[in-house]
Image (cartoon, rainbow, N blue to C red; front, side, top):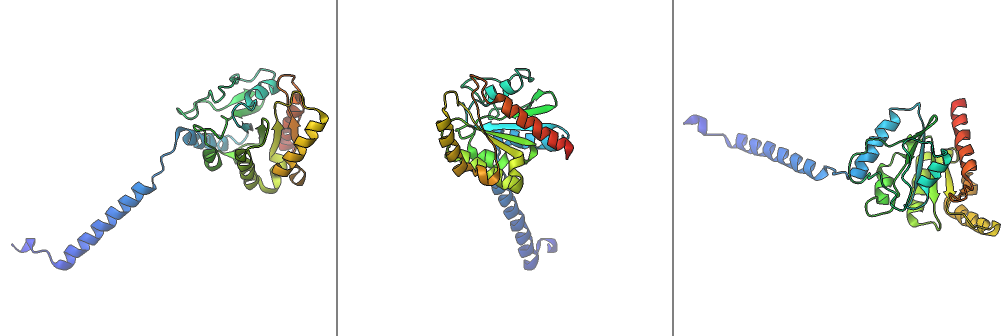
Length: 234
């Protein structure tokens, strides 16, 4: 039966083609990325930000318990919608559990993103460094509670990489829980922050904040409004 007598060259060619497809399928399987809910939410947020370029977008980032949500509430006179969840169980947005339906807290012509605290098991700093859309925001407030952690320095390095020479126009650093700091304390902290965050060299502003006594709130509000004015003015 002549049609069963397949020439050796054809058989070898068919094997080679089959092997190529198998290798490609295997490589595809190995390179498929399984994103966490947190990383998928970051990517979703990025698309929303870049598809809404006319919105004034402010990100508030920092470790859990740094007072980010309380600061947002104070800056917006408790009028932002929805109200931020305040307390030690911050990360109540559950970015690591399910897709987020609304990332924003709205106030006047601003859209704030009160990001869950980084450097935890559920919100690892590595996911922020790879997927958080830093450049999609008009301004970023980096909130530090007390001493500077390695993850804070990693985030700052990412901000430097993202914004380059324009970093002073894009970020400010907030030292929260400054309730009972003396002038001498503030000077020591400022010197430490200057070493770690290059405040003087990069012309980056540092604000001391007390959510309890509302200290520093007006200064931070003025800074955001100034940045918004500059954006409208070109």
